[in-house]
Image (cartoon, rainbow, N blue to C red; front, top):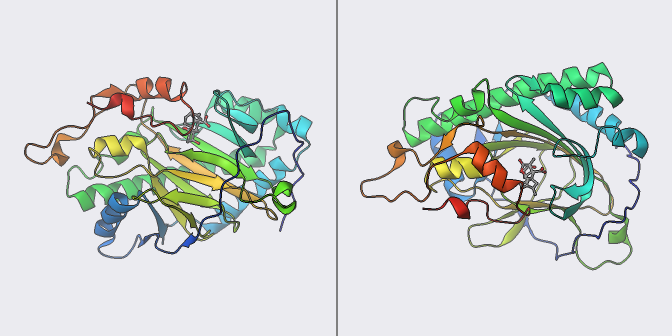
Length: 330
Ligand code: GA4
């Protein structure tokens, strides 16, 4: 295992500890090449808002290359990393999440993604600290994530039996789609070894704003999800699969049939967790509203129409745990 440098303790209040959760083995596994995958996928989005995909076609060698580069970046000195920060919202961030007082036991690199690569702005601050190899593997990875996100979204449309098949995927494949790549490092939390009773929040509970998120982590646990009845369970890591989350935008398009999953990450006492998350979002001007094709006879629309730009404006004013869709309910 790679040992990452310990981040310095900052003058930031620590997140509140909470009780550890039991491991949940019921996360749906969807083999993307299996006939009938689309129906299983729809069921998973309705029941959990989270599932993992196998036979996804993403070369594991590419995943390993990006993870190595991420580890190299997080192993730089604090001063060097901070040349790519502070995250506002993009760039290198340490402990602070968003701009409204949320904190977590992590450091991260948040990158803006425009259609096929990292944006010029994100590239500019990365160039300060990173080798060209990092930028090129990032762009390769983004391409692979876009392809995977699009295939999963197409299977969803197929499973819901709506046409055209690219009804969801075209939103994230659009030239102007507004997506994000997040590299997270959750360092081991020494307080957990000093008799702290409970666990430490790495990334507080929230739902993702976009359509779908594609997550891959190393072999360190930490991800927890809230089930339909509100119980929190811990999700075992799986280095070979990708976890797919339903985001708020997809919940709106499906009029609440698919659920954006509330999730969080807890820190580990011994091991670093490194995760890489691609968030597939719509173009700024995209209008979001329940698709009439998915509404049954007499079914009421749960949300009024709004643009992604409007949603984002509200999101950046919110705290992580807020229900950001509430204000768009009809
Ligand atoms: C949650 C999902 C993604 O990580 C993210 C986060 C974003 C940020 O870290 O800047 C936000 C959060 C996320 C939702 C509410 C706002 C914005 C922090 C925050 C408090 C990159 C995203 O798109 O939304």
